[in-house]
Amino acid sequence: MDISVTARRADAPDVVFLVDLYRKLEAEMSAIHPMWPRADGLDEPVDEAFLACLGDSGTRIYLGEIDGYPLGFILGRSRELLVHEAGVRVAAIRMVFVEQDARGVGVGEVMRDTLMEEFRSTGHQLFDSHVLPGHRLAKNFFEAGGFAARSIIMHHSDLGDGGRRIRAQFLPPAES
Image (cartoon, rainbow, N blue to C red; front, top):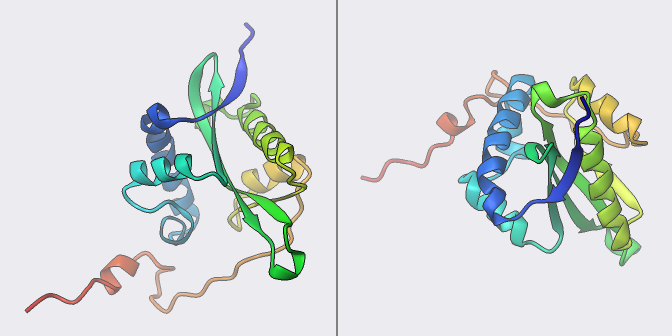
């Protein structure tokens, strides 16, 4: 049986799918590192964060589909390099997720390649991706697409739990 794997730009009616896929990504990333939803995820409420991304001219979101059903998403943002590289932009893939049962059939690759082609069409020649240490599948996915590591972000938490209790530690003071 042949399947059709495609990627298309997300729009406002797709937010319901994006939120569902994001929550699955969030659970997967939190299991790897508890800081992910606090430092690398989207602001809450997530549906509003997606709507803001969809309205941002420098952000692109694509849905990956099998036979027309969304089973993954990718989010990329364009940003300028430092001032001494005036006018040069880099497209950064901030998030990519494919449902577990839909992995290995090209959904991620189609989304990545489609996103990169759109950014290329606007003059981008530099691309970054964000991968957590220890996420071997994501590392291999991007390396297969021609990416190579150029930076690693190190993290330390005095909370003793890798940041799991951040919200509890930094609640606003109670009003008297």
